[in-house]
Image (tube, rainbow, N blue to C red; front, top):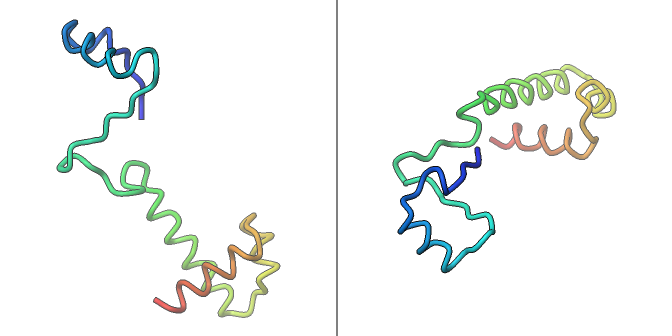
Amino acid sequence: MGYKSANDILPEGLLDAVQEYVDGEYLYIPRKEGNKKSWGELRKSKEYFSARNAEILNKHQAGMSVKELSEEYYLSIKTIYKIVAFLKSG
């Protein structure tokens, strides 16, 4: 998400109207419904974490301990347990 100056984008009349409600504050303007992107869509992080989590589950099922996995992936033991439990259930 980038910030843009309203002075550069909005017509003067609209800017004056917005300033009646929000003057000198940050204002979040949500995307239109048809323009929304799902989590991880832009940077492919969804695919990265899905692959990483599947790898964690495979290594756990092959006998690697939760402690070893947490050290290898720099995650807490609790997080490893959550990943394994989630993937086993679904």
